[in-house]
Image (cartoon, rainbow, N blue to C red; front, top):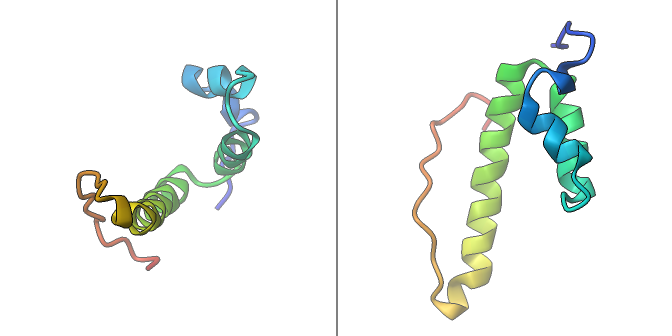
Length: 80
């Protein structure tokens, strides 16, 4: 589904700040632009899934150093 707004990136002040920040990575800027062109519910669900995947990968990488973060509980979205 496509968001019908003409410029969804400008609807949330945080988005504009991140996109204009020289300190923000190109990866996150590209992800935000891509997500803003999508249905916001679908984008949110996919972002939650990505967060879970990246958190699990981080845990695996850090496991040898005994560094852990709090458990994130995924809500079981339909796209798994």
